[in-house]
Length: 170
Image 1 (cartoon, rainbow, N blue to C red):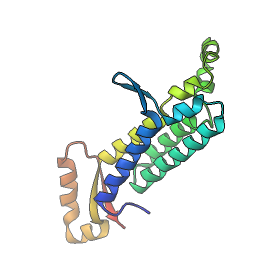
Image 2 (cartoon, helix red, strand yellow; image 1 turned 90 degrees about the vertical axis):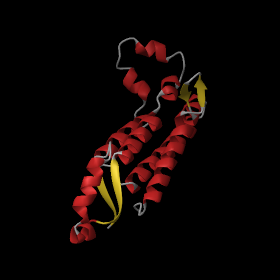
Image 3 (cartoon, one colour; image 1 turned 60 degrees about the vertical axis):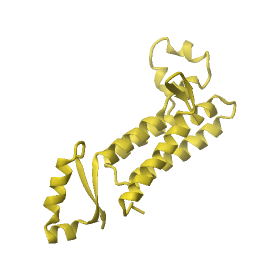
């Protein structure tokens, strides 16, 4: 289930990128991508389509993050963002807490949810966690036995942006 090679980790990164692009980066205005399949479905008169898509895409992101062994904090924050994006709690519900925002929301039903890019935010968190991780194709036990663990830590610290060390073999 977990990624066993650096190539698998790279494929996970790319699949997260694909979900991000499909969900929140289809239609753009100039250099700004503002809406994706998730937002388009939220604007349709069939709200269940948006929910089904959002939950499915969210589960893919969380599963891929789990496979890449991102930190539990990243998974929890991503889960909260995706719960909002999936309609379990809507962005509109949160925005309604702002005085006077209810009148603006009435203009475009589903508009706020269409513009909230939850999949993009969650995918970005997962990808950043992957980028910060130094993956080693080997086991921690073997690295400690043969003394390469200290070398692996040194390599991680010497590589700009790397903050975590993960051995891909259990």
